[in-house]
Picture 1 (tube, rainbow, N blue to C red):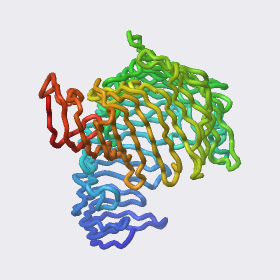
Picture 2 (cartoon, rainbow, N blue to C red):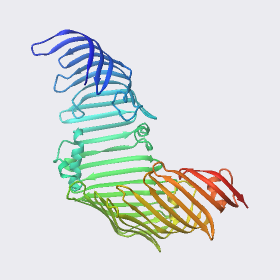
Picture 3 (cartoon, rainbow, N blue to C red):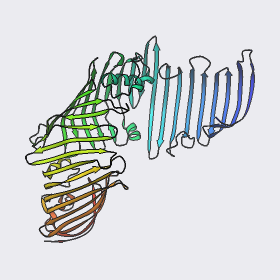
Picture 4 (cartoon, rainbow, N blue to C red):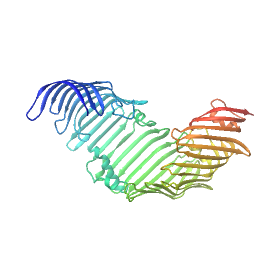
Length: 553
């Protein structure tokens, strides 16, 4: 608080115990709070000790508020009974939000409650017609009710709104949840929680909970753009960490995050004194419009600093896509006791991609605060190999190396976004990644024998890619030779943050059929050869081409 300027009539008396009782009527012309001067504050009410009963209005260029009611701070438990209307509040200019110049809020509220914090509040708070704005987005909530009731040792919180309904009942100290959850995790994974931060066993929390999402698009569009969670998503369970009793069930009919779609999500968690288990799954995890993991399940059991993890999926179609991957994750303390050492051991496993069985050889990943190491991760199918080995650390000479040997490139077609490109050919080559913590470096040199794009042969192809740390982009060059003829030359940049493309393409007597997926909405049954130059922009899933080409039969 800073300076204050006021003109107020006070009519009252001060008793022998220094308790002021008086009527107040007047105006505070200027009041500084958190380095902002609030203007035109009018008061009309009665003050009795630490109790104010009356009205207050604020007509400031950046906030307009009207308040009517009673605030009693004289008892050990504060009491509030009021209505308040905030017509507008520019949070940025009020210096309540320093990050967004468009930050704005308005609402109408009524309150009738007693309490110091969320853990001992009795009463209710209602909000109507609430609006919160940020740059380029806005959220509007019509109705919001928070009702709390404490009877003896049983407490209850009820939330009702047009976004979500939720309820908690039992014994709880919500402000202590992070600490009690740390104790709970430490019971099963002691090396994960630093000793100094782990509390003793606590009985502060023993409650049940239930929640149902109604209209979450308003919330997610505002706070997590790109995320959508469907109506009728539900979470319920029991939380009693002192007795090692946590049980919950989560169901989500549909979720979409930036094009990654998940259907019929179910997550069940349970615990005993010796073990905590998690069983989760979905009917389909759709990564793009060409590839999905169906009947996808993950099971995990944790105890004694170890997590046993199993991951399975199976699409049951005529063309098989399925997998079964088992791993064991162990945690162990380090000397500084800040970040545990993590070992991830992958057992012999397999995945089937487009009816092709790839075997995963046993390997170990090692992770600590300064280093990520891969012992020897090897995927095999006949004479095809994909190998990853090495380490990433703060030591510049440490490298993570990826090696491809005789790999049929068509294996990646299912992972390609859009329906524009089908690839074929045999890949050999290597890529390496280093110095990730300071100045990331990435390069690759791949050679593709008889590269095919959309069933048309371009020829033997060399692909060179390198990370540009300054622009956070990948510089790419590609050259294809069909005999002595350079059929294709590509040079460009892929912006990883925006997923945008910017490059040039030189074509030389290239069969025009290759462009059929891009032009099918205009022309069908294309034939002939094309020569010319194109600029490419847009994204991988929606590329945009501009330029001039010559066609011949």
